[in-house]
Amino acid sequence: MNTMMNTPLTMQVLMDRGPLISPNVEIVSKMRDRVHRYTYADLGKRARQLANALAKLGVKQGDRVGTLAWNGYRHLEIYYAAPCMGAVLHTLNLRLSAEQLAYVINHADDSVICVDEDLLPLIEKIAGEIKNVKHFIVMSNTGEFKTTLAPAHDYDKLLAAESIEFAWPELDENSPMGLCYTSGTTGNPKGVMYTHRSNYIHTITGGLPDLLGLTSTDTIMAVVPMFHANAWGMPYIGTMLGIKQVFPGPTMDGASVCQLIQDEKVTYTGGVPTIWLGVMNELQHSPGKYDLSSLRTMICGGSAPPRAMIDWFEANLGVDFIQAWGMTETSPLGTVCRIKPHMKEWPRDRKLDVKQRAGLPAPGLEIRIVDDNFDEVPHDGQAMGRLLVRGPWIASTYYREEPTSDKFPHGWLDTGDVATIDPEGYMAIADRSKDLVKSGGEWISSVDLENAIMAVPGVAEAAVIAVFHSKWQERPLACVVRKPGADLTKEIIYDHLGKHFANWWMPDEIVFIDSVPKTSVGKFDKKVLRNQFAEHKLETEE
Ligand code: ADP
Image (cartoon, rainbow, N blue to C red; front, side, top):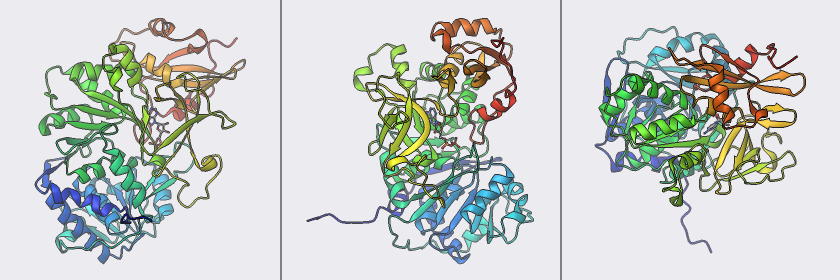
């Protein structure tokens, strides 16, 4: 006989915990022209006012509420109110093309869109194509915005007219609460619909010491955008724990991030490698300018952080630089790299070998690496296989699409990543399967080569792509960006690579480029590079 309560796993009880236990703790948002501060008590009240306003505009349970916004307190209010009232938070990626943005809004069938004033032009441009959107709510700092969108409401004025009381409805834990689209590096973006249950378990698990490891004594700053896989769950975990949260707004360059960490005494921050490369450059160019001694942990995911960067931050800031792996389809936390106790005393280089890996699976998830017959490949840290994952916060299908057996084989998610697992259980991403260099039937990891090249002094960025070769089908081409003024030659790079890789892994050619193209979430966009070098004839071809 089951003797336990069957209370539904809904986000309401987690979100309300912040205002309940930390009413006076601050939420700080950097705006373009000033810094906005208020408390969790204010957040709780405004989330309820927003729920009242949305209900008056006709938003019902299950309806999608779109957001096109930077990281800030109003965005957090929508993160809070939409799911708790039974609607669905749909975060729109503001770096999508106009065509993709219209596609995503229509595919999701958003009924309302909340948009930051400075992002209005992005929506105005596609207004004629998104006819099902019933209301636009403008988040303006002056209250004096002008727009061609109709009907358009002022966010703050809507809230001001509403009561701070709102009784959250009883919800089924399997009801939808959040919708994110993959950034669609190939084909149309695909939607992943999170449920209260999936996000509840993800939120509680994500805060654990061996995962993000957050406590109420922290001050957290998600630099990763709130439109990118829910900022890795940080706004939810932060609110559940009543942690002081700092939002960087639209300015995410190295100098602005450093200044905000110093001013708000941020202890914990998360972002993609591109952000941290910017911060590292700023600190290297302005030694002594910032006091970042409050910082204890930096989480980095979305693509592989270069080893040299992990080393630099740990050596120079004394922080724990933690790599994580995940994807929109995994809510997104999949693996997090934490050093085991017996590794603590290992020499620095050996510890970095571990830190360079994507980490151990989150409790509750299972991961496998398999060959094309779905047979497990050895966990020796060398053998590469397709990475599969399953668990209660992993997508089982895409929104409004039939599950396909290539993406969701036998009840697992095929991540599209190729990975290794070492005997200690640490997973490392070797590549996205489409980025692997398939040379004469053998696989070369572009990520490993990039990492090694980015450790060479004078290299700012490096991306390795596969280029057609008449004998080997594909061979690696390294596209390297020099640091300004660096005295960097191809020979220096080849010398360095020669110390780490077998001959057949060596790039056939190194070309110097001005910058590596980036995707909408700041990752290296190898599709663009591949197109650029599609007709390239390698020097090694006769
Ligand atoms: P998109 O597919 O649009 O880039 P996601 O943010 O969902 O959107 O990307 C997930 C992918 O990012 C993963 O499948 C993986 O290829 C890559 N990724 C995430 N974290 C890491 C990491 N730590 N190391 C290498 N690749 C990573």
